Amino acid sequence: MLLTAGLIAVIHSVVIGFTLWILGVPLVVPLAAVVFLAAFIPLIGILFADALAIGVALATKGWVAALTSAVVTSTVLRSRRRRKDCG
Image 1 (cartoon, rainbow, N blue to C red):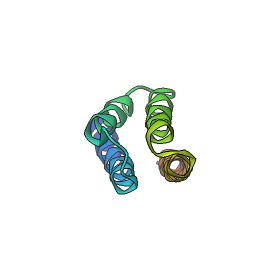
Image 2: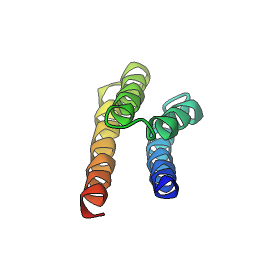
Image 3: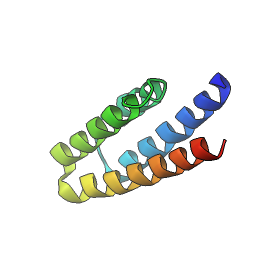
Image 4: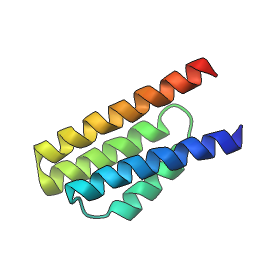
């Protein structure tokens, strides 16, 4: 169970980190690390970590980068929720 959660956390942090890197947002590695660690906090951890990443994107690159980051985040969260429901 922990191995599966770790794999999902790695995938989530890589996707969010890659998106932030493509958008040119600073602090990509620390934000990806926060997303990875927050994935292990049930229910609200990943929401706060993603909100932090979106906030940094908004503050540094503007609303287009924040909106793009929010769309990618919601897509990743939706696919993650589907995996939990199925398994």
